[in-house]
Length: 261
Image (cartoon, rainbow, N blue to C red; front, side, top):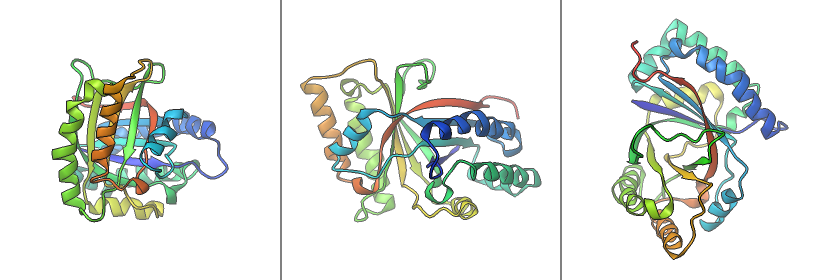
C-alpha cells in the first residue's frame, strides 16, 4: 500500500475560505467520481485550520516554512498499480480532467507531491481516529526535510528507529491519541506527477501526523518536558528551517478498503 501526499497552496488572490470551499464542494466530488478509473482506495482532504498553536509550534522550533492550506491524500495498492493505471486510456483521461480542475484553485508550481509508505506508531483501539470538522480532534501535519549531513536513508532510519519509540513512550503525557510516520519513497512516478504540474518546490522527506483533542487542556511539568524532549530529538535529524507544521481537519471522500475490486 502506498499513499500519495499532495501539499496544496491556493492560487494567489484566492481567500482560504474560497479555496477550501471549492476544494470541498467541487474538486472533492470530482476526484471521487474517478475513484474507480484511477483505482483510488481512499481519498482524504486535510483542511488547514487557523489556530494560534500553529505559530507557537513553529516558534518553538526556531522558525519554519509557512504552513500549507491543505493536503490531498490518496491511497493506492502499489506504485506499480498506480503506474499501470496512469498509463491506461481511462487513467489518462481522468488524470487530465483532474489536473485541469486543480489549475482553477491550486498554485501548482508551489504545491509539492510525492509517494510514501506508512509506519504506524500509536493507534487507538477500535475504530480509526478521524479529525472530523465537528469533532474536537485536530490532525497535526508535520512535513519534514532531513538534515543534509545525515542523508536520506540514515535520516529516515533515525526517525523510525529512535524518534518513533521516544514519542510512543510519552504519548499519553503529551496527549497524543494517534501517531504515524509517513516516509517518502524515491519514485519515478513522483517526477512524472511533478512535471505534469510544473512543480518547483522540493518534495519533503516525509511527514509526521499526530491526532490530538483540542478540547482537553494539557498542562504541567510532565507535559512541558515531553514536548521539550520531542523537540530536542527532532533537532538531531530534522532541518527545521526547511520543514513546516500546522493543524488541520479531515474530510473523507473515498474509502474502498475491504471492497471487492
